[in-house]
Image (cartoon, rainbow, N blue to C red):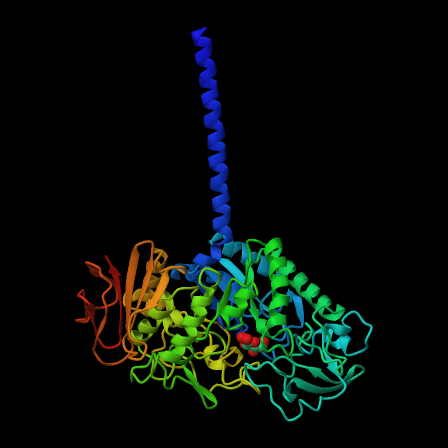
Length: 578
Ligand code: BGC
């Protein structure tokens, strides 16, 4: 009897144990799934400008097969996600931001099958991939636009905005950047069956897609509301584009000029409303995907439902002047004449408003702005200081291809595919071929010089990957160390708290703290050519251990009520506080 009872109790116990294990497994799977859905929180992005990355077929223009060849390199930096500027079919009057067919890869880069192969190879290596969604406009060679110009009752008629005249209240007024009320410049003369003008988004060859107007003016019949059939059809089409590529395995999109879609919407209320709908749809259908806004206003884009938005380095890295981008008076310069206040005020307002909701991305550069290596900010030490900033800030880092080896922003280049147009300065200088090694064309392409997408930097001492791999002090290896450090610590991750410790009105050196869960780091940046000492309110630690950077006689002395820091000229120090 006892034996029977014992057996029964044992069976019950085993059963309970079995169920407990199942529940635990289930919970764990759930956590893994959640973790994967939130992969972007740990992302360290690399931006590739495809025509200049690696040319596989030798025609002088980078391509998908070239990118596949270099995935191991990208991964070796510590990168785990890539975004590409547009690769869809295009006449390339604005570097591919003029799409003629969203459903096909342009033949100069390869085929849709090549893209699928790239996705598979990247995923094998744990790399996520995002494409660029040019949502606000197409090329004027897009068949949608051509058909739209032909009549009012065709499938694509209302994809664009046609007007019979330029309204009087707009005449003579320019569109002011950031104002978002269209000026006369947005009306492009074009006689067609539809009218005499169409509304453009950026260049004349980029007719705006019709997402509607915030407050349609009843005297302007072309101004449709965001809920009208035309704008709704455009939204459906863009959802199709998104689904088409997401279903092929892409992990998300960087959304070009996301804030531009609804017209005459200065407060962005209507634009935010449209995006809330689109983001909700996206999140339900693709919970593992992300949309990164090019909005430059994280507060607004966060409300619109985006996970990530960019902020420009602005006065930290470059002030625009004249026809060329110039790193004139900016913070990261050795003359020490820059200031922090403008940048700080903008950043802290955005940071406080979005913390815990979405992420700010401070990219090292991009295809529209000068590189870190520009003008007289050109030594490895200077670039290390700047790179330390970008890789120790909260949010999502993006390294622009070539910045990790210190490629130079080239001046005096010609206009290449809209790099220098009516409303843009020279952008070609940041779009030159990646420098891989010391062979012909820096290993970018086997083609002749005249076929190259843009000329390779002619400097005999130009940096390249092969050289920097061999040099333990190179910017490339320093960038790797920074990424390793970032990945090793919650405090340095996207979510760790950030606090400026130095006085914003005494900008050099910049001292800030990153902390999370009892872990704390102090980062000190001195881009100037002078040795500097600064006192900061004590962090009340017992020990400050240097974990990255060369002390060059610099130190961190813990005191009360101030900690004293000394830092050598042109250097960056990262201390772990214990
Ligand atoms: C892109 C530019 C492009 C423009 C128009 C920008 O935000 O980054 O390269 O010329 O949008 O599409």
